[in-house]
Length: 512
Image (cartoon, rainbow, N blue to C red):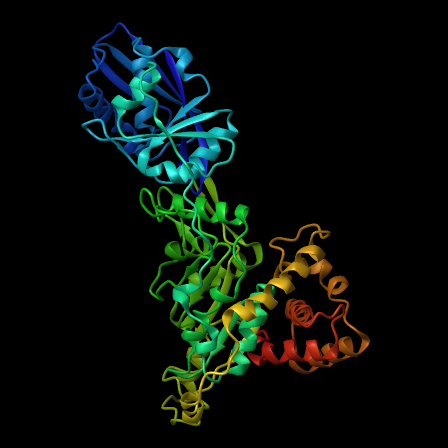
């Protein structure tokens, strides 16, 4: 009998697995038990062929493979390599001492080559936390797995090389983490290239500084999508722990680069799914569950262009995600939790034709069509968006004039200063999520905002006039706190509340 440590992927997290192999004197047969899925059950055929290709003899007896713990469903072909090594260990081909503190992960080809596995970083973190000190992975997955701190990662090209190393032969190459040199904005887009739209630029600055959700409304061609795609360039680069978290999620989704490329980037994720995306594609799901677009945008930006065109049920599901900053996918055999702490930026036309209240063209929509179009976005969803911005069509003289806006790098400096203030302030607050004003818990909003008497009176008049909900009041105070941070003010004054209310818009009032 032989035991080898490994791991399997569940959602975006690695689950430690102990591979046990027992060889008994019965008729030749291979049994794989321990809740294996189809790809794991089929490993017996791949392991048999790979062992033969490596010049080893497959035992002509009963082989029982147990994947513990038996109550956790095992998925993916990454258990091929540990099953092969454990089988040869049970047959006497590998000493038990060579497997002490060692974990193995990898998919075997029929000729013994090792193919990359999905979620190598999550698997590496799982085996490290389970007590392993060394990990062998396919060479293509080694740069990702080597990002796990406190773990020695060895890159293996094929099964024969792993067996030779375990028997004291040539050592496997030690893997080094592949790091990107620094952050980069989305496609090198710069805010300085935008002509006009001063109000929208200011809203982007507020959104970047405080992590606020943003909705851009305007006619076609006004620049809504162009402005939204410049938001990542205003955000500070990811801290190492944040970048590691983002890499773990993208690795579990199979979206990382190939062998030799940088897999850890300090740039913020940017996701822009098409409006035809399904609810599972947006929030996550499938069998086995995989992260959706909201999780792939974790610590970054999620752009929902043409927001009213998205599936209504998917949009309503976003309400809880925006509050909890996570998605829980429940299944009969267990649940997966996907982190989803993203910054939402959305765009919408004012009506089906897009020209309602425009000075450029006449609207062709009747009142019923406008009402049905507006009803696609519910009041509770709009109530959770902090900044509502009207983006008018740009006049020709503004388009012809030279761009005069601030560069993204300059705006990012102010954003970084504001976020530094927020990190220090929120470090003392229990229950805060990301260290930004948008994540201030409801109970701490008023103490941290510290509005002046004049600011409080202005906010009260706005509540009476526009019927803002308690949630909307808290969101106004969070945006006002961000405006004060950008200005370097200790308290929220009336002008900061007025600016926050101006970006709130009557569309944010609940529809009932």
